[in-house]
Image 1 (cartoon, rainbow, N blue to C red):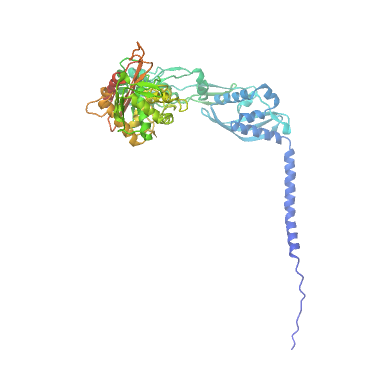
Image 2 (image 1 turned 90 degrees about the horizontal axis):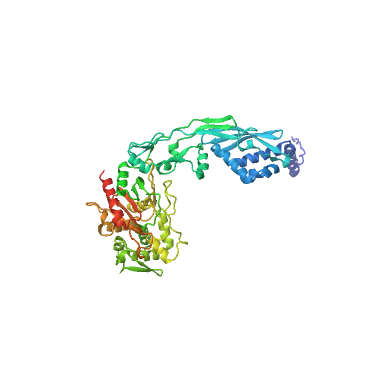
Length: 569
């Protein structure tokens, strides 16, 4: 049987490229349509009335958010810029910010144009009144791309309305209480009274009207213009803590934008020790002098008497602590390096004589102990201006003191210090070097702490802070020299039986004491710095007795008395 077969003709295959093209075309139609629609919408938005003006206002408030006053000024119309300069515009904005204690502002919504202005919702952050939600009405002149912001007084702060100016009515909380380290009040109440007036009178300071130069700072902090502030002493150091948080009303004309009650400060506990402060005052003996007592382990300032941190004077040979540190660290000398026994030295062509024509020299340790200028002035020249200045700066010179109101110790820069004579003079604490007992006590404390400089503080709650100045090895070597000063050198009058004390004398000449008729004592400052007990120091003392003669005779005994008193408690 023959089977029949069915033959079916095959359809021709479609061209793949043509099919793919059709598919892409079909898909592309919606995309083109969307693009066309988007373009049409964009064109419509671009030409919508008020769009350019809204963009202008957005630029303006965004620039304000970033304190970009020049950009804001550029966006003002020509009439506004003719009537006010850029500097005055910026000043008025800054004044409003200060009045409101403004910390930041941010636009959260820019509205649509209504007539010739646009309203902007703003979030305003202030120190005194917290966060405010205000509306800023921004007027503009012109239209479209030619529109510019029109300046009016109410545009200086969010929330103001036409005819209103920003102002405030402020009051301070009752002033906080100052406490000594043992909790005894040093100043409390409106009369700033204390049960220990002998101590308080030395350290608390006074309240006075806000100095003209500081009015802007206090206004920004929320103080009323008639407030009294700490002008010196602890009242100045802790002014912001003692004042608490000011309160009052922020006013737009007669409208109250915000109000806040003043908040009294918590008591401020200081590091001042009444017993040590009394010892420091007693040690001055009624003389014009300055004494600082510190705890080197924490940087706590235990006593400040007289001109302890306010009067700058040349440090004399106490500067040799810094010079010796730099020279030992640079490796240009050692404790056993020997120097010629001499009464003078040639320093850059100038003959520098030792005190009273004394012949001295020998090892570096001995030269330091007897404070030999003929060794240390040339050693300073060998160290060089750059390294001498750098070492002094590590010890705290040319740096803003950590205590407000303290005078800044200074040394000329390496480029300005001068030639060899000036460098040698600076190395022994003469020339243009200027410092205070406060700074030199910190210099001694740095050696006591193995080369770490404690940052002085009067705040009993502050955590100790240190800055590395030199290596422990170098600090230990300098300490050995300072011990020799007490044991067998110029500072034997500061020795305490049964205890190891480290110190350094200083006698700074204020004029040429070799001139005929010159009075050596009246023309020299007496310095002394010391700490005890070694090797676990508890107290460091820096003392200056201006116009009182030699450091070993006039300044060392008072320092010894303070150390003995402090260590006996």
